[in-house]
Image (tube, rainbow, N blue to C red; front, side, top):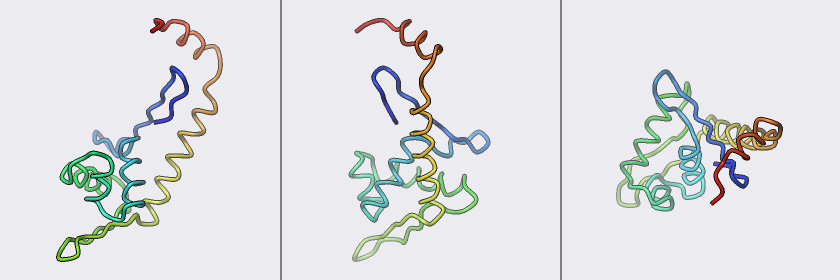
Length: 119
């Protein structure tokens, strides 16, 4: 989630009533891309395998095309990789975050910032 001083923006996408994508799921996709497995991605993010797998399963159900392609474990363990759709969704989400943060200026932000209690 991008953060600039007191401002943090959290973008969430929904498919019906189900959360399809957000900052945590983007981090999961990035970790799968980096680590090459759901287990290793979860471990790197401090999440259990089951929780991480449930996020992947939810994303794969919410989008028209699967975002993650995973093979089951075995003696050498499983493997997971982002599909082309997964890479596209992750890149578009990160671009949207950057675009929104670049456009966070103006009177409304100033009013909100000034209304915050100093810590």
